[in-house]
Image (cartoon, rainbow, N blue to C red; front, side):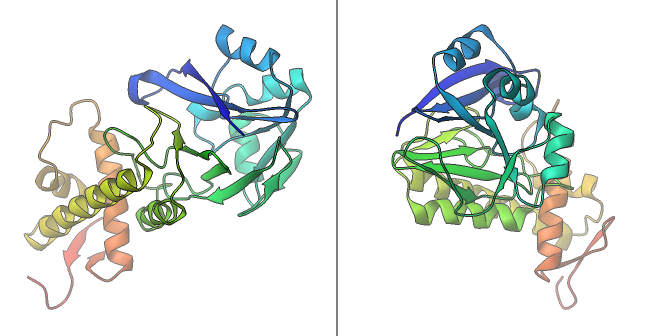
Length: 261
């Protein structure tokens, strides 16, 4: 089963302000992440036998046109089990059915759900023989925002490792180019996160206590326009380090763990 991609401009902070929407082959095709209506996406939907609609996660730049296309196509709307209230609030529609890890959606030859939390708690991917529609877990260029309070750094790293172990031929991301060197990309993203974590921990051990001060020491690049995203990412790292006992973190300030300097 192949995926057809339509790039949709979105009013968001996504790279280049574009979300990739995917349609699987029919009959009974799956529409993934309809971010908003455009003429190109309208044409693609009209030319495809859409029977199912689902999203990788609930962020606004992935759900904006779910309700409209559901009404027009009479497609079955799916949501992550246990997250239906959040889905309804984001997409403004009540889901018809729910899925969980390894659920096979009856679209085309079958599409398997893969749990990939971290960027968002409900984040999933959709796997076929050709690859995985992976939403905002991986990017061919740059890195992915994993920001508190919704972002979970431990879960995100586990999701990257899960993708690495599944070794799909292709990752179809929510933003940026299609990823063909899938395992190398996962390894690079893991290395990036662990290097950032080392810098965050070093900042704490050198005396920085508040997220703002830790951010100033842990980031070496210009953050104009994205400081809030970087700050949320620092907090996600602090939460991970605190849970793992590498530092002490009370939700407001960080301290070196007992016995560390």
